[in-house]
Amino acid sequence: IEVTQYRVAKRSCVARALMAAARNGKIVTVVVEPQARFDEEANIQWAGRYRDAGVRVVLGVQGLKVHSKLVLITRREAGKTRYYSALGTGNFNEDTASVFADHMLLTNNQEIGEDVNAIFRFAERSYRAPTLQHLKAAPLGLRDFLYSKIEREVTNHLAGKPARLRLKVNNLSDVETIGRLYRAAEAGLKIELIARSMFSMITGSTGPGKNIEAVGIVDKYLEHSRILIFENEGEPEVFLSSADFLPRNFDSRIETIFPVYEPKLKKQLIEYFDIQFADNVKARVLDADLTNTRRHHERKKGRKKVRAQFAIEDYLRKLS
Image (cartoon, rainbow, N blue to C red; front, side):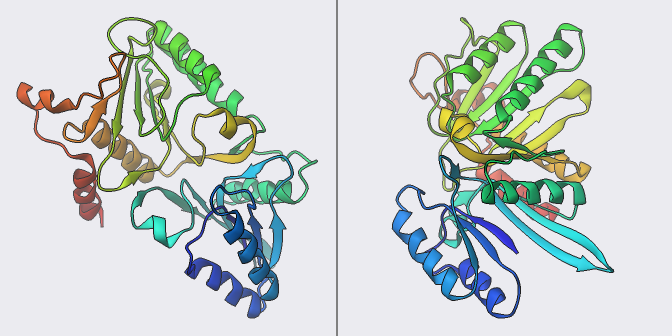
């Protein structure tokens, strides 16, 4: 069992389960980030407790923060190695899990498992860059991956093919990424953004962001997930990510963007995004006026009331 730890609960059931697994003879490795802001002391203490329980501890990666949210279970089944992976947008933390809105992908896709394994090996030996087939990791090509997807959407748009970019993040203030989005918008690509916190773009009816519509949602739960949807000629590609669009996430952290291949799950994430983007109760318009105007006026145009977090609760209940 291999796990990354950035933040855990004070009385973490996850940590206790890992220690119990080690005591029961499982080989357990935890990559503990000793520089997690506000949790430095707690993580050092957890590292000591892990070692006492027989857990192998990797204390971060020199020069980088490990911010990826990964679990890898490796088993021998019928003489073969099998991988079971969990990749998330949020921490394995019971305290925040009750108030944060995040996503996690559970998969037995063996090629994804091989990529997760490669990232854990990189955490142990950071001088050896991993070769990844399906995941993209910062600081090892995440920027190039994102920019190539944006350029492809622009190319498709200019060729008259279905093209659109939908992004949900916590923060967006990376200058190079903003420039790429502006150029894509100026080429005519439609871009929809959901950003909860820092947002350093100018959007609206004029200027470089005239084809960019951006909103932020602050409600009962803290919006923490990161979703990337590329239209891809009408065959959307969907990715989840541990990374925000900040310089630190691209350049000085180990972050992971991972694909969602299962058609049913892709459809759910697209519908999840669309529900959030349709919010006209808690959504604030992020534009050049910087007034954080709510979208209440849309209801006056005959559109029904949509409070995204409540609508998503109803949506998920219907799925279960």
